[in-house]
Amino acid sequence: MSGPAGRPDAVLRLTGISKRFGALLANDGISLELAQGEVLALLGENGAGKSTLVSILFGHYRADAGQVEVFGRPLPPGQPRAALATGIGMVHQHFALADNLSVLDNVLMGTEPLWRPFSRRAAARARLMEVARRFGLAVEPDAPVGQLSVGERQRVEILKALYRGARILILDEPTAVLTPQESEALFATLGQMVAQGLSIVFISHKLPEVLRVAHRVAVLRAGRLVAQAPIGEVTQAQLARWMVGQDVALPDRSPARSRGAVACRLEGVHVTGERERLVDASLALHAGEITAIAGVSGNGQLALAELLTGLRKPAAGRALLGEEPLRAQPAWLVRHGVARIPEDRHGTALIGDLPVWENAVAERLRSRMFALGPLVRRAAARAHAQRIADDCDVRGAGLDAPARALSGGNMQKLVLGRALLAPDGAVPRLIVAHQPTWGLDVGAVAAIQRRLLAARDAGAAVLLLSDDLDEVLALGDRIAVLHAGRLTPARPAAGWTRESIGLAMAGAAE
Image 1 (spheres, helix red, strand yellow):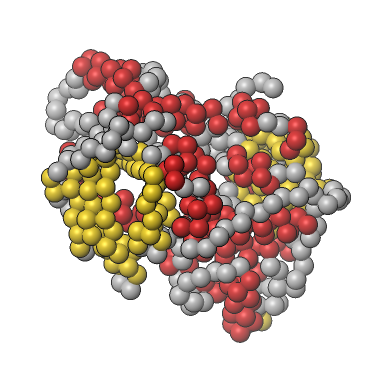
Image 2 (cartoon, rainbow, N blue to C red; image 1 turned 120 degrees about the vertical axis):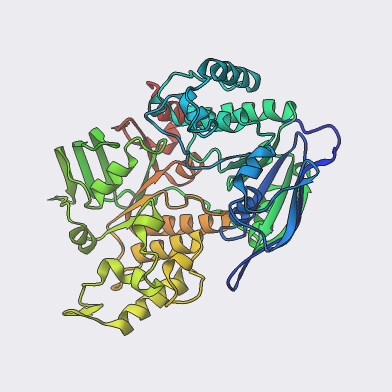
């Protein structure tokens, strides 16, 4: 993507931005500029201060010190409406769309007063189609959003911002749930945007796409701006080093040493549900092997993960753990060596208000190791929690701090340690890892991927469910794809290309 010709006056200027939450200094005197027609990549570890800075920029937080200027004028602090009015738009990673409304209705939502007796739909439709044409964002204005693909929904979110007059666009992890083909389409759209003078703040943990898309990069660490550079002067290794403060070596996956016995088998399984389902799914998960399932989120991954962790039962077909029928009883599965890394670390994996030590033993709290009748053996529980924290490098305020006080990366390391480090030292029989590195920085990703590879080499069967195609290709010994609840046969990783996986993720016949 070509950059702007020369550096014009900044359209966005942050000067000395600081924000404190109690003892935590989330932003420490950050000063940044964004030029017209520029893509600025904003990078940093989880907890580095990116979200706080963007929330200040968009008016969700009020800075304790410093000032934001947009097109040369001070931005009133703490006022999202003021940010919108000055031309700042934001596309969040999790879309805020009403599935039962049309594209046009979603775009218009919030743009007209409730007391207005009628909506100027004809004029709005014409304006929407003009914006779509101008930026190459093809949409069908009358299509129900619930029937759109993930990539099409993202177009609607971008159009919402552009329809409101956004001239500065903040994109938060914009490719996290896109197929490779949809990501390519997004990159082409960004190229048209900057060519027409829009400015973009691009937040991503995917360093290869940062190097491809951005003109300049800014890196935060521990709340401070530690580096800025034109994109042509940096490497992926340099960016990772700036983010975490040291060299980061991504795991080098060697092939599985040997494929062991089948740990879990699905035979023609159907799982029903309002939002997600499985249709005639067959799969064999072998000890000593990582089977990676690619797919856009919402195509049956949650149904598969919940089936294998005892939260759903098959409506038809057979699910076996070894030679026994797999029970819809999570406690039974934990006792029989099934370890789970849930997709939602905030709402499902951890109880945010409970201390770290209780979360560390939550799945085994009633076992004899940690309970004596109704009484909790606190010393034993805390000792095991400390072992997890030490072994998995869980950093935070200590065992007695609430789990919600941990950063996303440290939450995930706690969940990983709970799953992989059994109190008796046994290797898990089956590990169900659902989005294990979602939203994490490069250092945390490397640590978690190494753990999964080590568990595989120790003899565990690993099922990896991930939206991240790079992760699927990096870890999977065999790969299958889920689309609309249907699972392709799992084939050796060498039998897939990035293009063929992307087409299968989009539902194209092989």
